[in-house]
Image (cartoon, rainbow, N blue to C red; front, side, top):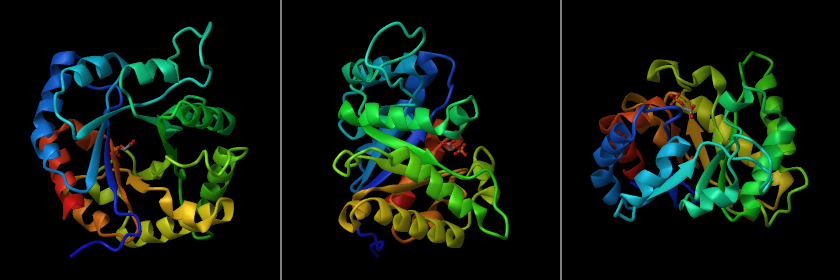
Length: 259
Ligand code: PGA
């Protein structure tokens, strides 16, 4: 049975974070997922390794299905910014996607203004940003909804509707990141949030454009919960952390999206 999404394309994005230690281990993970990824029919598989491994992995990959992404980028085009990486440099490596505003980067000091600048730089470079949003906690009064709305409004402020084409949004509640399937969100709560995010998007851009923005979920997606979460209407995929480092788990999550 096909899932009731207006948007047919789905995404499975692996965020490897600061793992693994060596290029050899990185290649092993990629090798472990490429066969299953090559069979995917409706899911775009993206892996976001640490910067030092992007080139080795991409140039050594002869398949077509897996795309590559970065976990961060700097907003300036070039210049004296020690330690930073530009969108152009990423483009030369064949990187197509860039995670922007991950909560672990926000925890290191990235504020809403930085997130907005990065989003703009990524879009200007013709790359696809994966904008991460998500609340720290929830309570009865529903403050998390306002939190999410504010994150979206400030990330998109000053950007044209046209510029937003290509943006993906990953809803990643911080309380669910890096835990286990038991601590992830329930399908019911996720559905509610997907509808809410769509509503906020409709207030910011046209309804048509709002429905073109893929909405992903991230936060302890594992084989144990991926099937029920994948059945949430109008959800367009997952951003996966720890389970993306385990090929067997990542490919099972892919199967859940392919059903
Ligand atoms: P997790 O991480 O799957 O390990 O919870 C998700 C993320 O931080 O992107």
